[in-house]
Amino acid sequence: MDKIVSVAIDGPAAAGKSTVAKKVAKALGFTYIDTGAMYRAFTYAVISKGLDPQSELLSNSLIGQVNIELLDDGTVLCNGEDVTRQIREPLVSGNVSYIASYKEIRLALVEMQRAMAHSKSVVMDGRDIGTYVLPNAEVKIYQMASVETRAVRRYEENIAKGIPTSLEDVMEDVRKRDYIDSHRAFAPLKPAADSVLLDTSHMSVDEAVENVLRIVKEKTGVEGKC
Image 1 (cartoon, helix red, strand yellow):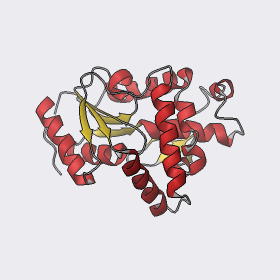
Image 2 (cartoon, rainbow, N blue to C red):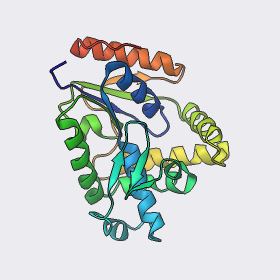
Image 3 (tube, rainbow, N blue to C red):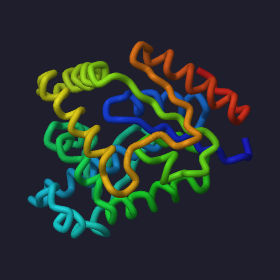
Image 4 (spheres, rainbow, N blue to C red):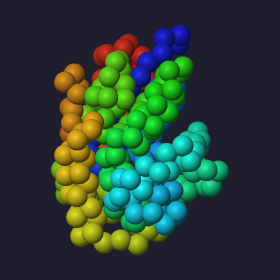
């Protein structure tokens, strides 16, 4: 396929975007870009330096000092360190929305994200891909689910990864992230005007993937192979 196609999947915390986006990218033969992992990696860098992630000034001081790499196998490197597991732990999860709300950090990471999508077809998921990062994406999907569904999904994901947590703590974290993400001044979480809304509250992962692939085919003619 000669034409470069961008698929933007946005939505709130724990909506299952990354899981769906990975499978969609594989089916289409596109590159998957997990922007959430990039913000998590930056959050990890701030915390590991002993800085307060709720301080925009201190967090901004690391701009230019954090090198983030996303490998094809899902490994996330932060300044050469494999932080794939660490960025999913509660301390990072509880602070990533603060980091993601800081304009200068967003600008720095968005520049990286746009560069990734410039030369190849991608499936990119996050909070503001369709509205800000890739406003000209051929396909824009806003993937959502109820707070309760998202909390249970994230709780089960954490338990499966051996990350100690409670459902109550995850529910509180999801609600907090929803508020911060949707109320930040710069590039807040919201559906793009031309997004297709996809509520996955009662869908399995495979059903969600099938729906996204259907939308991609309708919009671009590109057909995925599951």
